[in-house]
Length: 504
Image (cartoon, rainbow, N blue to C red):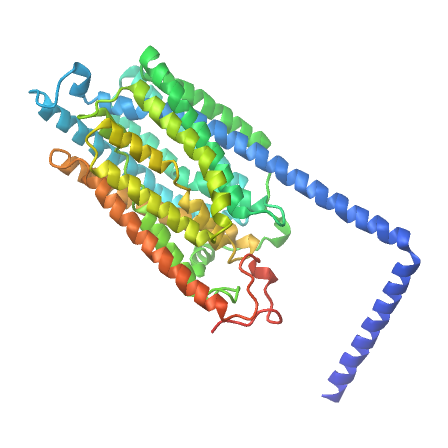
């Protein structure tokens, strides 16, 4: 024991001597000190420039991708419904003898959407797990490339079916392909983890994620305005082909412009089975950050699951194209583009404003309540002015899932973000598959009795998610109040036992 103490004392003495020598050298060499400081500042500036460049390239490519998908999606959603011979386009009123055909058309379109979602979301469940395992080993570019390629193939198959009037069930092949590439769960996972990787020190990660989503959403909704005229002038096929061309451009740009952001020096090579186990380790192992507990991940995962259960349905287009509204392409384009611009402009400023008074958790609760309000308005809407009010309220909705990702990313180390965001993508895939099939089938079964029932159910689901998140916020605030030091925004690796009293 004495030997160990003496050895430690000798090490400390040598360390003190080294510090004295270092201080003496620094005091006698101010020029050397200045050069080192300038070199560090220059390196920080270069690092900030590189991160800004990465973000700009990513936002441009994702924006173009949403432009292409927006043009394609607007045409496809209407084409698949009109293909079912919607009587609204024959000028029939609600009490016409064609009303039965109208209801059958909506039911057929809704049930076909169920099949496309199942074919897409089941394979995406496994793909997102694989992407999550290997994105923290191979890198982030893999996720972008996989999605862009899969989306291009899916749209190409749909364009072929529409152009040559093939059997509509060939579209299911394209849905399976985009599922193998991870679907939009992988796209947003890539966008958010890339944003987190390129967030400079001192920047607001939540705000940057909201900004990135706002820009891509604006690009998506600007196409809704153009697509209304385009569809009425050229029909449905050529807008879909135009979207296909833009998606091919995005694939090429992704290959050449998206740079890898994963720090390979921190990579730990692991196999597939241990990697999948690590994906979900957040939910059954004690977190490294002592401010948080395992149940925090469980509750936030449950919030994402419940909230995601409200997002799988694709019924709004057929809801507005059918009676009593019978909207055409141009009006749908006006409304969607106005909503998109309004939401993109408002959400970034509103996020900044709300963060002055409340934390991210309460901001997410606010967005939940906005969603509940406009879904309930849809549920009881019979007139156009009610739809306009619903969209006006919806323009105040903030993207909940980016906020949830930002909250959870604070609780872990940077080299764990890919795995964490992958688990969120897996949760989304599961909930989208289940809720998409369930809500679309509910709409198909109840459209002739109460066509707004599906929106009422969605509102109740979101209300449950808001309640869970609010309870979590109350419990977290009480726990943090009992800590000696509150470091809510500090990353997990900065917490040490010397500065933080561990929660029990």
